Image (cartoon, rainbow, N blue to C red; front, top):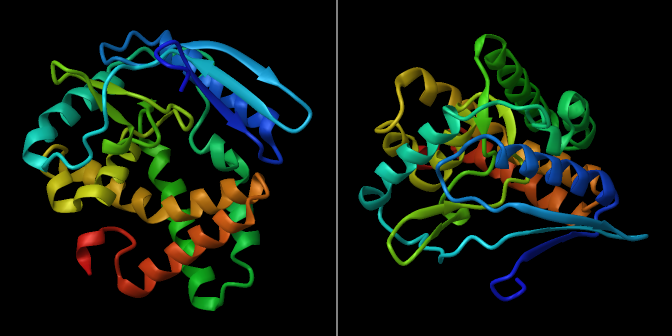
Length: 246
């Protein structure tokens, strides 16, 4: 944070230049999508030998991740409707560009090769289910990491949405998947129809595999191991699709 003048995001990942180029292009496209929700605006990008960075405007407000579901669910509905009704302009990445895009299944196959038969087969099933879901879905603007951790509330109680690093044109159920992680499928099901919830549960199961793939591409071995451990733990608990199912 640079006071109230700007926010600088810096990447030291092995693929830092491509990472910041994708993130800045996504934010630029989102800024032209006609959203009513308060969002940051891209200012500039910079690249060095071992790092890349992007600067954007500050979205005023504070995190209130402790706010109960009944207080925030109608705000979530408003933001999700805003995203789904936005203009899809050129520059928006496709689904999972942040974790490999079309090569995501191959990356998952590689990084789970030594994870044991049960984990490897479960990962293969989840990847196939995700890909099959998207064949019949009309894409819309997707935040890609939606939830209370990326919402800032100003003094009037109006929400602002930040961190569009994973924004893309894809299935809107992707944004419901992260809400399931925070609040459970039953609560998420209060604000979306049955079909969207069913797809969101599949996407939720895939989230650790997406994080692990992105970490592998950025040579972040610690994060990769942590994400794969999360997938394995959720598989063993029976909570891949819904954390409240345990």
